[in-house]
Each structure stands twice: as structure tokens, then as C-alpha cells.
Length: 215
Image (cartoon, rainbow, N blue to C red; front, side):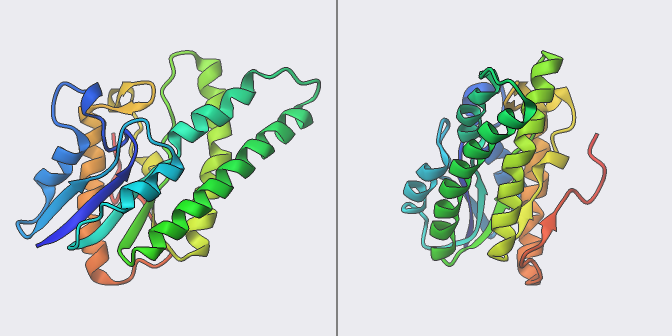
């Protein structure tokens, strides 16, 4: 038996937000008979909480899917409410926030690499806020944080699952920041496909996006 492990936050541990199967159950339903799923992700977790989750890795873990950072971004993007006199000042504030995010994310990635389990690092999907201006602001700022994820994972030759290309419809969200059953099914399809990628041995430093258009 081999185990695929989900670590991070409510992207995977979303049972409290859906009336139906959570992401972990949806992934489990897609697994081959000789694979199991272990949910170590915890709703509300931050980047540095992943290190504690890794201490619970099962001995037969073969794949480690990491989705974390969304809650850190929510905290860091509070600077969007700060008053500045120029756009440049605003960018400097965001630069400080991104710097802290990078520091925490690098510490987490080093802990992931130390497990010797094949990791797949997820980007952070865009939110679905009803206010168009706030949606635009947060989505633009989020790009800076996703750049950190892609850059730091690539430097370590870790494959990246770009879930921004998965959550493309309002029906994919149970609320502005949590995946719905519909969104979870899309995500589960892509995660289950990682087993084939893992078996191919050609995943070092790759960027993985959905193989077909997601509506």
C-alpha cells in the first residue's frame, strides 16, 4: 500500500464548508486500489504549521501534496487598507509582506524536502469576492505571493501544481475562499493524476496544469 498525503490548510480540509464530500474524500475516491489518502491538512493553518503536520507522515507515504499560504496572504494583504500617497509606497508595503511570506515559505519547503517524500507544491488559487474592486485588488496582490511559490519551488526542482487554472467558476467556491464540492472534484481529478506523473519520474521542476479545459 502506498499513501498520498495532503498537508496544508482548508483547501484540503474543507469539510466544514460543504454539504457533501470534502476534498480528501474526493481524492480517495479517485485512488487506485493500492493507494490510500492521508489528510494531515488542518483548516486555519499557516505556512509554518506544515512542519508540525509533517511529523505525522505515515511510513508508506509516497506523494506529498502541499497547499498552504492562503491564510498567510489574508493576513499580509491587510496592508491593502493602508493609506499611501503614491503607488510606489503601496508597492513597498507589499514588498515587505512578500518578504515575510518568502521567509516562511522557504522554511516550510526545506522541511518538506527533508522528508524524502516526493512533494507537489500547489499555488494559491484566486478568491471569489463579490465586490469587484476588492476582488481585483486581492487577485493582483496574490500574484506577487504566487511568484514566490513558483520561484522557490523551482529553485529546489520541486514540481508545482498550478491550481489557479482549476478554480475558474463561481460554483467552484463554497464561499469566497473555500472550495465547494464542485471545485473539490476538479482539484481531486488533478491530484489523482499526480500518481501517473510520479510514476513517470519526469516531474522534477515541472509546472503541472490541467490537461484539459476546465469549465
